[in-house]
Amino acid sequence: MVSVDNNEMAVFEGKQDEALCPHCLAANDPKAHFCYKCGTPMSSYATIDPIGSIWATGDTYRKATSRPTRPIILVGMWLIFGVPVLCYVFLVAVWKVLRPLEGFIWFGVLVGVIVLYVAILLKTTKNYFRQMKFEKSQARAPENDSSE
Image 1 (cartoon, rainbow, N blue to C red):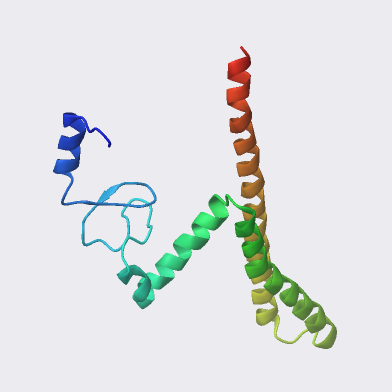
Image 2 (cartoon, rainbow, N blue to C red):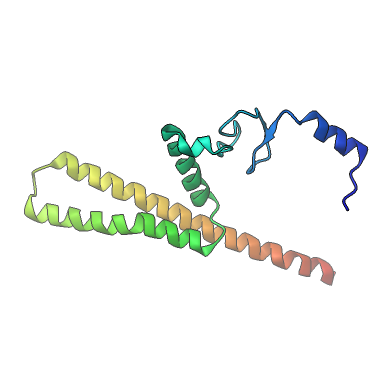
């Protein structure tokens, strides 16, 4: 059984009319579909609504690129963005050989998409290895503290 202090209970009772964000724990309006602080979807309507589903998908990609915590997230991002990069590079190479001066605007769009996807992949990979390094240093920290 968990004992709750009276002060903690008062805090909980005062917040009954607010919904907590599952990601950042910010207090939100109970009818809110997205967190006002971090943008995380807070209701099923947020993923059913066509515009809301775009926001929800963007939130998922943002979290995956900023803090990938598991290898499957890194592999998934490489599958989502790496395969198109390879296809686009192939298209650009073929395009330059077959039609060197035609469709310059589409060529520029393809190169821009390649640059964007590569930037996403590099950011995700860098953040994944940074997160792994941080977790390893945190795991070693208690060992160092106990030896002193």
